[in-house]
Amino acid sequence: MAAKPRVAFFDFTGCEGCELNQLNFENQLLDMLEHVDIVEWREAMDDRPGEYDIAFVEGSLSTPDCIKRINDIRRRAKVLVAVGACAVQGGINGMKNTRPIEEVREEVYGKDKYLFPTLPALPLSAVVKVDVNVRGCPMTQLEFLKVFTALVMGKQPVEPNSAVCVECKLKENECVYEKGMICLGPVTRGGCDAHCPSFGQYCTGCRGLVPEPNLKAMEEILVKHGLSVNEAWKRLHLYNSHELEGLKS
Amino acid sequence: MDLKFLASDRVEAFVSHLMQQKTVYAPQHTGKHSVALEKVDDPAAVILDYGRTMQSVKKFFLPPRDELLSFDLTDHSFTPAAVEPLDAILLGIHSYDRAAIDRLDYNFSQGHPEKNYLTRREGVVWVGVSFEPDEFHFSGSVGISPHETAGFDAFLTRVREGYLVEVLTDAGRELVSGFELPPAERPKPAPGHFHQHIFLPQAKLNEVMAASYNNEIWAEMAEKCVGCGSCNIVCPTCYCFNVEENVDITVTGGTRERIWDGCMLREFTEVAGGEVFRGGLAERQRHRVMRKFKYLSDKTGHPWCVGCGRCTAYCTAGISIVSIVNRCVSDFEERHTTAM
Ligand code: SF4
Ligand code: SF4
Ligand code: SF4
Ligand code: SF4
Image (cartoon, rainbow over all chains, first blue to last red; front, side, top):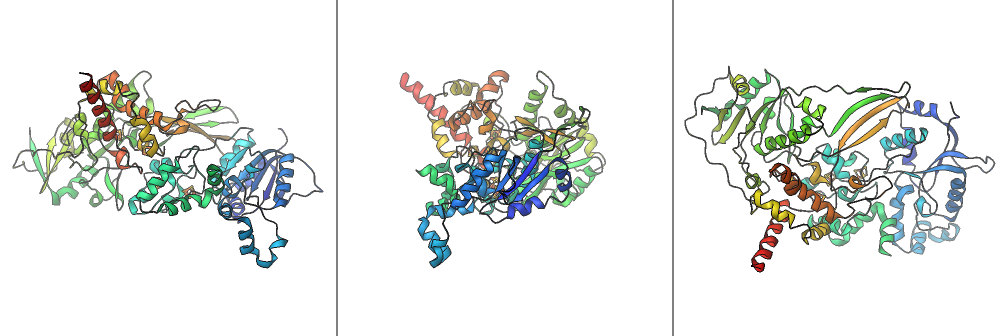
């Protein structure tokens, strides 16, 4: 058998919930380890130059140092996988991009702000080429397993791109709109098996927007269900600031 | 016709009587606002007076996710999934959903007969129930009355004090035998009125739809539609699916599944190389409506829409298939009167 793929895990700006979710594969963890050699965990070490067959990267890029590190990881990795909403689309951190960066810096670091250089929160794809996305906040375990097995087999994983509503209706969940809530499922990428609506919760859009979303129509739906235009866009921004700011310009 | 009477207070006993014969699936609450066809464990949970279930009976013959086979990567063998006849009583089914199954029977027996669907279809005893048309039903416009009994073995028509029971086949007779039902004291009432109508019969619609390919309605709908695919996924006559393979984490084997798909979804028309051949929502909306009112009806003479109203009731954007079709009709008529 060919040598096991060399796998590394890295972490940028995020809550580390994704990583916890990776460690949470109680039943599958040992099987997964059978197929790969984990060569690095979290910190890229300069004294261990080397190549990775697969690099899993979570978190968004928010400092000049992040940019340096992600470029270094990209240089070494054959396949780079963005894991979780922060890495894939900038995540919640992206909300800071809607305000002037100096204002954000001052609010967080106060008078010490000059010690902490900061950038708008960026998804990995804004700086380097990303080969595969594992979406979700925290990342969707089921999708991680699918991506993991596909890569171990040397295949390109299939990225889901239909709306959350599809999986929600396949499960015959009661639509949360019927319960008087609003839901971003209609324009959010599925692949989570409609996790939140299956538990009676609305979709906050953590897996990012579907390709070519019809945002004007989504705004209309949200407004029809009682949100102001401003509130509607705030909801849409929660996980999608980076993409929406880009669409604006 | 031999018409019997089932009093409201004996419905539970009737359901129990059916449960002694076969597994029963019937409408039950799955949420405050939702009713779904589920296996009956408690006769008291059955609801015969309901608007619509989100998913139709189709789900029993063409499950949303259906394992087709499992494979073994170590010896490259595969085993087709075991498929059993449903062999059950489907109770409380509305006429339009029964009519949808006739259409799917056609779809799945044409050309290469589809074994999984046709196997599951066996052994079903159909017990229909009348419905009171709500703001979305329009099956009357496609020739399906709330009292239509075609395809049923027995049919229950709602009256104030209970149900009138029609026994329509030998299977139906067997079903009710041993359960005391007095003769009905009055004839079947007239069915309820529809609140939604398509203005033209299907025979004319084919011509209208053929002339509506370039109607502006498609672009107008594309502005409101988010392309979520709900209208396809809840439609009782949609039968498109995708096939996916899942490899176990041990990388020694896995399964091949088919999963419902729909023409409103972008991915549906994405082909190798990444090209999407019905890229716009206008083209996709047009395709969906043409599939219901033109393409399949040209071939079979029947509309492939049974007027259940689901696509409209479950569209968060409020897009109504009746309004779309009527707009095509009125534009057509306008063009023809001005031309005259
Ligand atoms: S609950 Fe949300 S995701 Fe589910 S069908 Fe309704 S809008 Fe779509
Ligand atoms: S339902 Fe929405 S918020 Fe919940 S996991 Fe799925 S994409 Fe994320
Ligand atoms: S359910 Fe409505 S919004 Fe969703 S794809 Fe169908 S028509 Fe468009
Ligand atoms: S097109 Fe709409 S109304 Fe017609 S059968 Fe399908 S879901 Fe029902």
